[in-house]
Length: 167
Image (cartoon, rainbow, N blue to C red; front, side, top):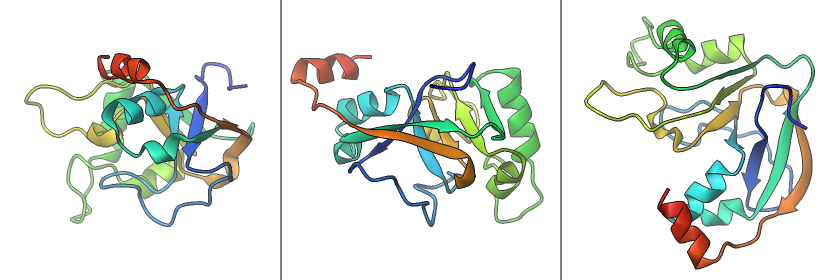
């Protein structure tokens, strides 16, 4: 069961195995950690976009230890702006102004969840969450994650995938 106030969070996987801690970020401008889907957002997006569908064959619900420092906010909120102001303003010449200093973030929180999440639109400057794709979260400290049992996911039929692709 998810902690009060948190949606169900899942780690999608290509096998039933509990994942190893990653050695690097999964893509540019993302922190090292276990990426979690809010509900079935990643599964739906993956099938609708025909992107890495082999990675959504299994899932495990992820909950957290009682001492986990979990932060959740939506895009476009005061909390999102405060996070951006705190972690994206840096004097580190290797980081752009729009990229969070992920080691600083990980020092302050164990899990970060963006939900609801909306794709950045318009002519605004690049937003640090641009490549998150769906409402999701990232475990920044492996010690706090508790993996539930593996659940094999059915392959959706074409009509379902088409519905997901249509929004």
